Amino acid sequence: MSHTVTAIVLSAGLATLTCQAQTAPIFDVASVKPSEVAKSGGKDASIESITPSPNGLTMSNVSLLSCIRWGYNVQEYQISGPGWLGSQRYDIAAKAAAAVPVDDLRKMLQAMLADRFKLTLHRENKDLPVYALVPAKGGAKLEEAKTGSPPVFKVSGGSLVFESFTLAEMADRLSAGAIRVDRPILDKTGLTARYDFSLKVADSIADLKRSLAREQDPAVYIASLAVLGLKLEPRKGSIEALVIDHAEKVPTGN
Image 1 (cartoon, one colour):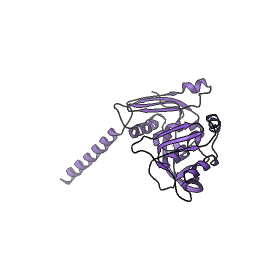
Image 2 (tube, one colour):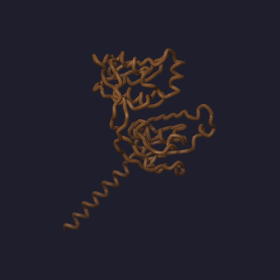
Image 3 (cartoon, helix red, strand yellow):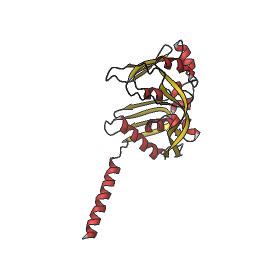
Image 4 (cartoon, helix red, strand yellow):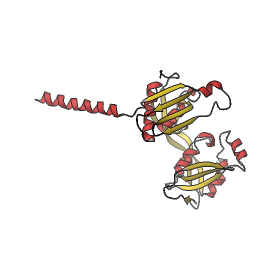
């Protein structure tokens, strides 16, 4: 009798595992090809685009580094791996069987990267030089956004405009892409509301574009942050990193 009960329990456990495996989100169809833009060269060879929609994901001229960053929802500085991750370019079109939220699209991309690029990685904490975003003497001077307003980031004249942003989201934005400073910024303000504010970094849009062609000196932001009652403090900080154990340059066939 006990053998029968054990067999039933094991059988039920296996059925649960099988069910979990079957319900893990994956794309219904995915195409991965070498980037057409990268092949042709020219001024657009370094421009990437990632466009999620309810039914899928379109990625043009993307590096595997950018795919990992988007799929795992981390910043570039959190990814440690071979240099080619940022140089090889791909065009990816993936469709889900039905409309899904963005979080599921990220999980689907993770599964696709493991399948097509044989990507394996692990997480570990690393101590890195960072800037801590903290209130200045006298406290923060910020205007709260209207409740329910969606976050908007834009450039206006020589200013970076943040609408309905948390300070953590602003810190992430200043840690990545063309406007990034020379080390990650970690939000240590303790403030969690959404705010409307701007950072003036140049006198004109032309000056701003020239400035964005290089990594930003944190001094560019200091005066604007001071107006908001904020400042950057150099520190050592513990950052969760994704360490790439293995990835293949040439994905498996479509």
